[in-house]
Image (cartoon, rainbow, N blue to C red; front, side):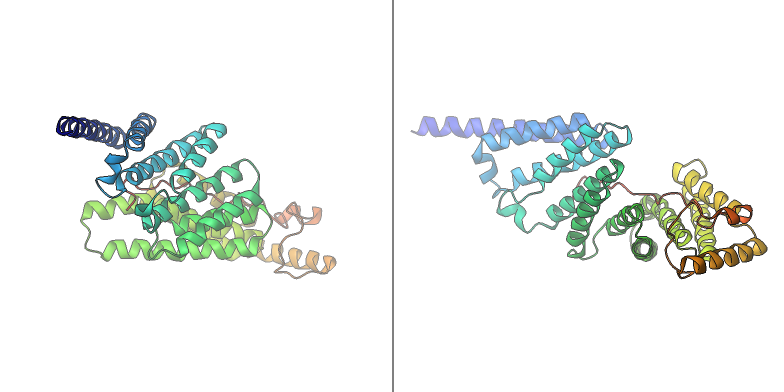
Length: 336
């Protein structure tokens, strides 16, 4: 019996070392951005941990859960990259795997806030998938699930991103008043986030990392506010919002960044459509006259985005706002 016990202990030690080697290799690959290779290592490590219950029992069930978090994180990263490269089938397969990994797998995971954060991020990204597939109702369902989870977490990351994605989907559904509200909430959350990062005790390097990640999202928030204001015919406000988006993008994001290109294009198109004060005044009179003919309010949401023929000379009645920009979310590798 003693020989068998010693042999089993040696076997377990060897398995623990193999598991540690897989985890170390996966972490190194993830840091290098090689998420697909990292995912294969995490999956191999999970197979090993689940096939040897003693490995998980040594640390009260945390090994399996730790590996599930890493797999969920990698799946989200690869899925969003796949979505950007039009590989939708691979994206949704990986997001479903991430959702599976964020379920309660054992007592160690049940009350872990990082599990809830991972699940919220995954729902958010599934919402982005369905939006791209032009299935806005399904997108909204998943984004609202994400928001409910995030609202239950103190100081949750990515809440602003989810509000922006809900804004984009509501806009797609023609619910521009609600879309504007979500964009404005996102704007407030991002301003608070950047302010507290600036006054915190974090190192300059950590603050710069936050700025690099969040200023592009702040530019998107100003842009999306402008888009919805334009849809609602709040023209002076929309021009101001577009201008702020451009200022943030040029000062903090960089002129060559795709987000900067998008917000500058919206700003240029809005100026071309609505121009200076005289043009704005004429557009307002034309819009109000058309609203009276329709029996509606000048503040009502547009019924016809193309406008009336009589308005074309001074700018369309309901201009061509670009669609709001959505935000894919990458969970942190540590999932803290």
